[in-house]
Length: 529
Image 1: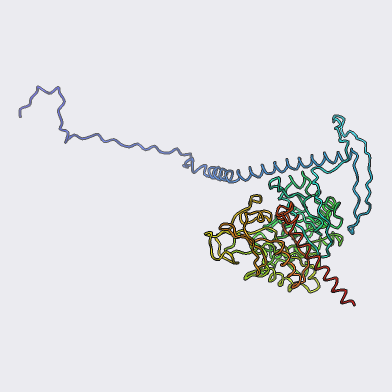
Image 2: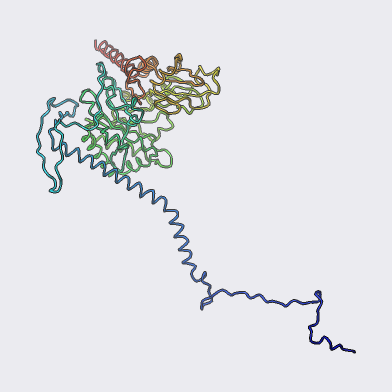
């Protein structure tokens, strides 16, 4: 074999197809292990779990804790402001010439009509504190609402409760309803709605009006002008969930303490009683099956603490299915008045047109509800039953303006109708808003005994002086119930813009009660002869 030595110093050329690539081995990095053979994740697993769950708990609790701390700080600041305001006026009372108002006897009479003037010299409470410049004029409460002077009216025997809504001052300044606008000549009882139950005592639900603007005390000042008037405070309306009232009424210790606190509150603010407004007892997941028993015990404790010199009124739901939380036989024995919530039998969110409190209807009505209540209570306590009426109008909206069924009640609707320019609540209007709503003619529904108007594609049902007089006279004649509760007197025409005089709706109710009282006195005189 011949060998060529000419190209021995060169590398042989290997074809690409037969070329073999060098094999590279992958080196995998082994994780670090401890002496016992565990990885860091396995060794510190518990710490990782603790760290993870701690961060999750902080993420979940951070927001509510922050909100709670902000609310606590705001409540504390509000409390400090109220205390500073109260101490300031207490100091002015103690260090200025002030008239001491006449004391009222327990029976409601005035012990003395004169006022005595006491002079108290100013004393420094601290060496570093400079004396304030005190007013020289006689002392008077701050933000005192002037009491309107209404025409004289005849006193009635049948009670007329007037519910004062403390939130009505938030309307436009021209239509804001103040305590001084309450027509005390036509009412026998005025109820301040409403206070809040905090723990086991009464508290303000709106400190800006109740305390700063002296809403509580200004309503009590109505008694200086209307000597026959009795002023009550309502509680329970804001506790709609029933849990707060259930907890309060379930404990004998809390019932006793709450009753004592209520007595102190009434004495301090010169009120004559309370209105228990437990919306629906034994309702929902927040209620308790024992609410009926606990409510009876709460009212019984209030009666024993307040004695008979104070008035106790209780509100109950209208429908029989919701009255299982009320032991009527026990409650009627301890209350002075049992108010049936008939002012909102129907609302603006129903699918058919109705008045708020129809006298007679295909569904629930005043006659059916009150007849059931009369059957449930003992016969000798029917004089304690009261029924409530709303002075607000309900508006319903139709699909098109020329609906053929909108003149009758009930008629199918699409939902709540037009709202008022002042009240600004969809589906509800005040009487002074309805009477000034265009030049639309008013009609009277003889079945439900209420007035109604047609405005564009809206049907508006409301109470007029004519409908109220007819409805109340029929209830007096048929059911012999002579106690009326006007649930929202701020919806009446207190300024006389409708041309019917001031508070025309309340005046019509008062007139019917005067007629009924005269008729009853004449009937009793004939029986005695």
